[in-house]
Length: 223
Image 1: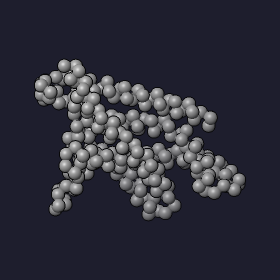
Image 2: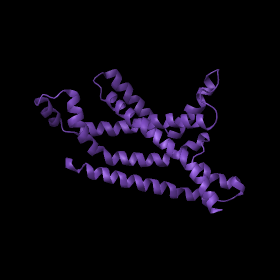
Image 3: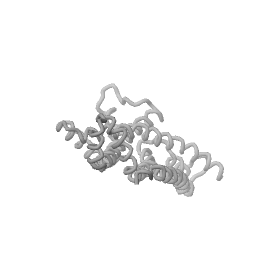
Image 4: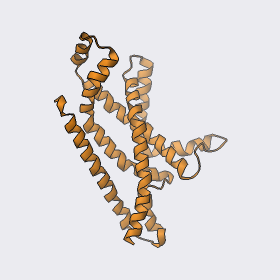
């Protein structure tokens, strides 16, 4: 029984890892672009960006996911734009997660960039550096030191938030654990596999915690 449960949970953990990886790959760079938009000197762009960030951060991710997955199919006469089966559910979840987390990341980026003393940028200008050189050689490196703790918190939260994808029937690890309560794999009424999924989250988040601790040590030269 135990090996059957572990095998099923391992299969369910694969979509969880894929959703986590795709979200990070999309949200990290997109969040930086959104941060630039929210700090833009163009007032319309600045306030449009901040309004979108306010809406995304102020509404539940579960609601955003359901709207993104179900509403287009209800509005479009041609039917749902998402592919059928697990593929469509996975990409709908990925896009919803990327949009949501890019808005959270953007505020972390913005705080990190604005937290770098203005004198650092002025010193770069005195040395004849261009704006791009000042950003990449002065601001960016100091920003990284400041954003690692809040960014690590958001990324660890992302690991747990992947379970929300089950509201559109994406078969991630929580779905796999819950299936044993409904009669999956010849067993019915088993509740411990659902709670056992917590071990996977704890182990993965433990590895991430060690990774971010190592990154913080590497960035200690900014102290």
